[in-house]
Length: 497
Image 1 (cartoon, rainbow, N blue to C red):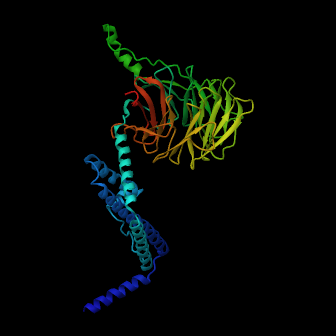
Image 2: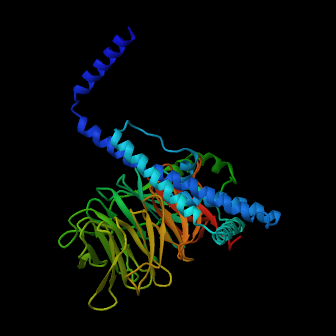
Image 3: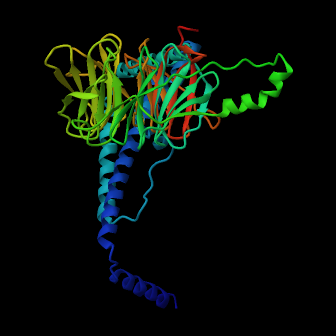
């Protein structure tokens, strides 16, 4: 009876195998790829185990000669060393070895075992050749690593918190800008509007509705109540932004003021709107596609615009006529920025480069900065003749204007970088796609990561940040994102503590 049942199962299995499904080649390919992945995980796991044993042995040999404090430090160093040795994903590899995720053929299984065996033999040979001197060196390295970790905990921390929140846009916000000398900020939104906000009242004081497309950038004039915006309608506008940002004092001195309180509330809730620009930059010689960014030159009598048509254009403000097209990028531009005191401009592009344009001479000079591997999302000037660039390749690079061949510092992060900003003190604020905001200095050293919880911080991509030249009502930094919100951050750096 058992023989008959076994024969029936074998016959059924043979019939199932004889029926080759249509996706058999794809399954075979997947099995092969899984086998390769398992092979790599198995090798990493073996290396992790052997490195752990080596560190344990080194610690055990030096334990008797250490003081109780040094023993505790060495124990902490072993843990840290094992995590560093594992590489990416090492902690999980040390906890749980990889297990097969799909059935493998005999041939692949044999190759897997052979690879694991050869890896084990080679690691065993390396461990057997280790001398007592190498063990002492390993223990010294462990203590050095532990000392660095302990010293990092002693460093003063950055105190940061959200102190203002602005809301009212109906779509994502592309950029935020702060006005020098006045407690107001500006925002450019995909809802086709730009807004001027009072920082103290946290409400919209003026809404500009003159564009027919997404408003992609916003910049304040340094000395006058003027605003420059670039839009998806292919134009750039300059418009008047004279607003009353003073908040009326609370309290009533007479019964008449009490009677008028309802009218005052209505006035405060009403948002002034503006639809007509003072100057529009378009027409012959203008852009043929979306204007993604615009900025004032240091003289304030010219502006620079960048577009998806792969060009930037230098414009005269008084005549609204194009002065010079800037060509050379191979793909769409993503950002333009002007130097605050000199006639210099940087343009960033999806072609993985950004360019420096020097208008100090009659014939402009151009320099190409290469170093990113994906789209350059922003490039801005910093103090000491430096330029900081951010990219979708998840890096930020600090460059010197006199040396365009290699970056002075490279900051590597875990998410794409959007429109960053550099403070007058040299602190880089980096907005990320993953909703985080990080602070670094110009040497590439990490300063802080701004807090983000369910109660504070952005809930979607952070698209732009802007420093306040002077703290505006305790707000040092402003950030905006596609959660339609703007935050004002109070940031106290260690030297301020």
